[in-house]
Length: 158
Image (cartoon, rainbow, N blue to C red):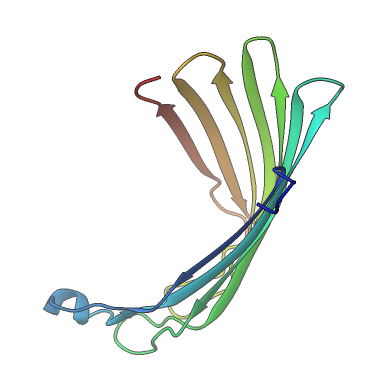
């Protein structure tokens, strides 16, 4: 976070390629997991509707580098990314996040097809409770089945 602005966050992650070894089974398919560089930014805008509601918006780019083109899996160098926005509606008893975004993942070789998708979801986080719920969907731009995910979280302790 830049000094003096706790409503902005930058991220950077680097993973070098990983040599897979010690197993003849995995080596038969793939010998190296590509490296990855991720860069992101997220911003928060407070006091919407004159209250505690807030908006979070952000973007992330992921570069997959130094893949390998032999064996069963071919993994090409690829640049993927996404952006989204989340509105957090605050009631007297809970926070209800509503989110929408779009992800772009181009083809990265055989068995790694392009996957661009509109994503959206809703959550429920009651105040003073250790649990929460999130329901999320991804609608691929090529049509077909919409992915759905339900997350139930529980925080142990206080």
